[in-house]
Length: 531
Image (cartoon, rainbow, N blue to C red; front, side):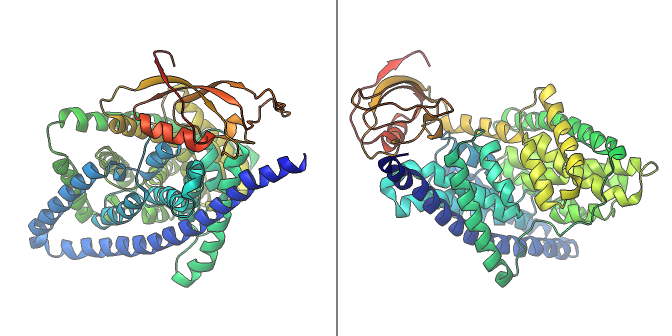
């Protein structure tokens, strides 16, 4: 590699990747740690509030009136800022892929306070999704605040922020890096890995420094004392994987049914009343038992200690599935990660109780941990993330083979039934809401890679092009020699002419993104019917 190329790689790739990634990671860790402190306080306050209300039921009408006001406030804010709706991970994925747009500061503040309100009411949604979305917002804020002239780094910085948010919320840094590859972008490239790793490493270091001072746990769960399964017991994780995989198929179909109910049967009902109905049902169920509501984190710990009877397990599974899906279908702010893990534990608990005559009680906790792993793999279609999460956050380093078996089978079964991941289903609905009734146009044009632009020295596969944009061909400047790397990819150089075609409902936004990548220039577009 010559000196000029090395300098370009350092200045246009490696240094910015580490700078943006590290700065985003630090800021995300600070934000999410503050959020975790607030969430812990609010959830504890919610539980105490339900205990107090159950002893003073005469206050119920006043509480319902307050909830109605909050519901209509939520509906108003969702109309003004649509990306405050629903689970944070699907929204973040849509933003990272360039499908959804958002205003980072409004999104950051809105997600922070609306999700805390959700936790106070007790809606069974989690805090990891909002943490990922806040990390995404911090990533954009980092670029827009400190390097507005380098907007092509926007989606890379947001990717790092999303990974750092996930890692800080769950205490699983490697899983956080893999989140970008397996879930957010569904591809691997050096730029994605470097930015994500820089963000996660800086976030982890920041968390380890400030978490003890704030009295916040870095990990999502305490260390589990799990038995090591022998090769002769491999049927156990296989059974858990199959059971959870089948449940994932039913759950994903149930989600479509619940979504369809609210969007068709309840179509004429104002959004505020739909949200209020979820709040009201949550209130009634919470007065019956706090286990029916809230994030599910404490319920998981109770289930690991085998404190719940099988009849109650079945009721919890039905109630929490319905309430969580109803909340998400109506766009109530909060994550799905921990609630989905809770459902996996419930399925595994029912299975474990049925197997107690065959297996020992010492294996009960291991079955539940396998249920968590299988549920992440089956419902989110992220088997590698599920396996690493089990090792990092659930203490399964000595049970790697059982974890792999459970995660693999839970992933394969929904694939056989053609079930999409919960994140993809939610994102599909969000994308439809975002584009509305606008019919996308298809454009065909040629752009030139300008000297000093973001694209110089990068592979086509490494660049986050605008959504639905395809580079059809590259014509190299005849005065420069095109080089092909050992993988067959072509490196872009100043003067290269790119033939691109893209479909978009937001023409101006797409043009701005493209110019940020290839450099400022004027070009003519031709509308076409072919994509």
